[in-house]
Length: 522
Ligand code: FES
Image (tube, rainbow, N blue to C red; front, side):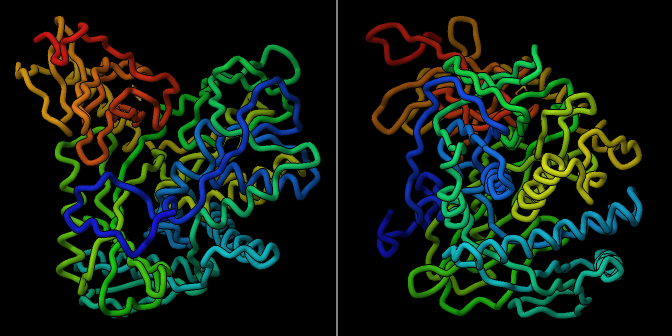
């Protein structure tokens, strides 16, 4: 772990790194090196996978977790970690498109998730900076006042302790706000790592650096297949890989799109008011504090955009920095990081059976930006489906629901957007420039093909084929993270071509250079 007192990244030039990851130890669970059998195999060691395994083990089920990288380093390691049932203005949307019963299920599930995390923290004595806080959604726009008032009214009808306000403790004026009482926040990796320690033993286990690439269903017991060819046979398989690594004809890539957003962790000279805050309108501004050394960090988040789309991604960080500098008395900016979220076309998550015909395959995805409560909801819901055969919230989260009115506009928009990006990526006209500078990445023409080029700090040039290995769209350069991001369904790759985020599990093809020729042929 790093010495906190030596940091300063005010100029935003350092490689992004998450405070949650930097401030917790690495894990070293073994890789799977043989075939196994378990009651339940869970693919993915984020908060969904670990929480579900914990609850299943408590129910007497033998569980195996298979994580492609290290547990808790994906979305869980890059969140703002607000544990809230307040998901911006979600309840008015659910009431309008799904009806009161489904809104009640969603509210009950997320309120129960807050209580479940609080109970686990207390019972297991987990030191994870957990504290109850109110959550606010505020507006500075006249046309959102009525929306906030309506959301407050619906939330109250659903039994949530919600209040409409005309001011908040924030140091800037607002037009209206909605306050949910008894919400919470924590350090997500401290929580996850403590839970993970409770899983191995009595037939349950965790395997890291074990990438799963397929599921075989050719006999009674389905099997997860790893990229090294090992098989885990299980009565039930849960896909908890953020974007599902296996589709099974659920056609998730037509119903989910991925967005990125950014976080700055700043120190300020004043103290931050108690509470978690988010703006109702764009550009989104999300704020919370976090215990840090003898003081606190303030997390300033927002600036979402569809993965792989847009240029000069670093400007999103610059916008957050400018907001922070004009809003707070900033002493320093210590960390910056990004996260990726799966959004469903009708705004409700998919948790339950992968398809209506796959009784022993389950999925949990599409939490939008509200993964802390929804991952715990997923754990409870999946445990109940597996142990009891039903959950009180299964209809609200049903992955096979048909919600044409709620989903059609976003479905059409997203799939048209994929088509446009597929075609425009292929038509790119590339400037012929002979030199890629240190730290620079861009597409170039080489041997009549498009190649993605990046030169690292040591001067080494990396060339990759920019055809996404999922369904063939052209990836684009992300200058803030030094990655290749796909504009179609959000797969991401390192500058070397290694997979960082699915749906793909195959790396970009590498392009060889001529020996002794550090520059590509142009
Ligand atoms: Fe689907 Fe790239 S993620 S084509």
